Amino acid sequence: MAKFHVNPVTGNVGACSADKGDCPFGGPQDHYASAAEGRAAFEAGKNPFPAQGPLKKLTFNGRDWKNVTLEGARYSTNEEIAILSYIDEGYGNEPLTTITVNLDELGQTPRPGAFFVKNWGENSGIAEGLENAGVMKPTGRRISVNDWNSEAVEMELTPKYSYLAADANWGKFTDESKALEK
Image (cartoon, rainbow, N blue to C red):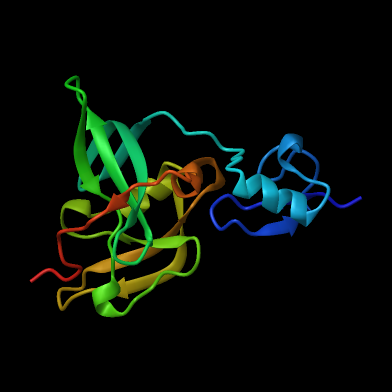
């Protein structure tokens, strides 16, 4: 009998074809007898990947950052995924950087379940750092955002970090900055 799982980032339900114990979308408790049962579990907020603790190390912009906490939100203008980071250097969580960038002004929309990572300026190399940390993976799409060869990298969360996109209680994030650097 076929078992169904839910991609916690996109909400898509599909028949599982993975070998027993090798499904990237969870264990036996996260598989359902029907697609409808899987959809109902997703809509009820069941996520096989609970929130992770801080990243022990995240490398970008020529520095190793330790104890980095990630938080998911939505951009208020288009409901696209926004991901923020915080660092605790002994004084409590303080903002580190906004990882994602909203490219509405450029007419660019990420594919479903994906988002754009700002990979220039103070975020230089963050896409690679997050990929190396196992948080995200690139889709292969890169968007040039200005005349200085700055690029946004389209990425998607790995299943382990899908809770950043699947949290039903996301807040709204208003990005005060512009997608284009002047």
